[in-house]
Image 1 (cartoon, rainbow, N blue to C red):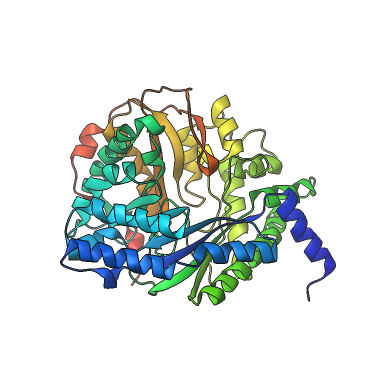
Image 2 (tube, rainbow, N blue to C red):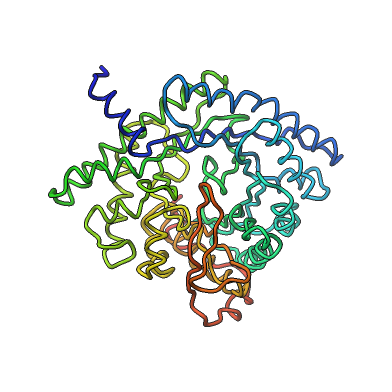
Length: 451
């Protein structure tokens, strides 16, 4: 039974504490669009996306109005384009331009899936797509790209890691006149999930239905507000409070997901119960950690506090929905989180501390501006370190760093909107070039043998 108190509490969460549905993402399979003729394949891709997603944005807006729940983004994810490229051939950039045209036609905020899965090696289409990423991202506005270079089952493809350091750097250089925006739309994964609704890493996995609706929720401000009302409880009480709050947030996501699924006549997939911050004041994961008692995010104790937060969010969320998936947990994208930005500016937060934090939270080193003269092999080493954390801990990790071309430590990079902005952070200057140049594969860890 829904009572008046619950209704008023939810209204307060929305109006005062930045509670929102971060995204409704429609996943669309493109496997039936392949054709030996590139132009026919692209025509089929455009037709299928625009047919399936024709009512996506309008339906999201209707749900917003009727339920009073903000839905910030409407997005599409598609089959990794490297798979389509393998079957249909041709210049991969043509597929990116087709995705861009389809995204503009249906009016979504982003379309993800300009992707390749190379954790165990390169199949047909993979290398061509990866090498085309900088050009594809520079020529499109809505297209997002991801590459999975490792997994707990396969180990880490260090040849792909070495390649991705160069690709990230090239993507920064080719979009330097736009604050290196290409890199903000490119994620390098280990253990990438097939059903992630969040950008820039979303793609529609091969084992997914032909079309599906996935929803990502967000509510860092709600969690912080709840903690501010219980300043004296111990950490067990803090965990219980976060669990109860995450339950309420996820139930709202479940409601929106089912409603969108019904109206669009598309199967419901998962709710991703991640706490996804924004640069807006009051919508920060870092501020939750500080509400727990840390003077500043990034100081000693941050990793422990984040572990508590991430675990409690997952426990509360999984009680609210039978189909939780995607990434699910607490995100720590530096330029997208007001508290993280402040901590980075004052020197409390370093990239080394961020790496430690990624061992206990969702995703990884996300939206971090690094010096513009950072060599490609250093970027590759950052990717390798983060992939190792994901591989050994059987969790998803990722790297989305932005070499700020022409800028040095302490200078600012600004994207605006949800991508935010922040200071260029310092990196270690010792060279990993010889290690990266060895190539090959880092073998899968012992915990991969679970069959």
